[in-house]
Image (cartoon, rainbow, N blue to C red; front, side, top):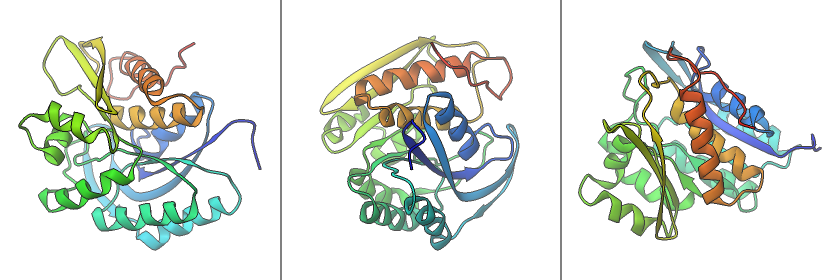
Length: 252
């Protein structure tokens, strides 16, 4: 069954404010000409500025949600967001690679909610690090990159690892007047720079970036072009208004 556009699947948490997680991913997919499907990995009790609780979905329930989709739809591009731990992630990736020929997996290694809640600590570091080579691309922000790779010589470490996995480093956590994201791919570093917006902070911007990148890959773009388009879409999202909840606007 084909809707006339490629499919993309988000495996992510449910944020009732729709600023982050699976709802933000689906909005991004659909706004970029991709038919979005979603599997819930966690229920979060939050709004854009306050986080109360997370309720994790068991791995067998996550797989059951995916299984019925794969029984009917040709899904190859998958964005993975909030996952309980490295063990669940490992089981999930193994399942996807068993069921899908050459899946294109974009993983957003979320360690902390923008509303302040910390999901994972150092216990998951080594396991997450080992799993990265099984992804097509990972999209850490600066603190997440430091957590995974260490703070010393980060640029050189990302270059070295980019021969195994594409890495899109989100640069929004710096205090510079110019915000620079960097794609590390095949031992090359490709920067994308934008003027920092005075009121550009948005709940879920990391989710929007990673799901847009997934959408662009599903549309057939090379990783470097997909990354450039994802950067532009996310910047437009950040500039959409002055609140913490951004608007999705298609770039013509």
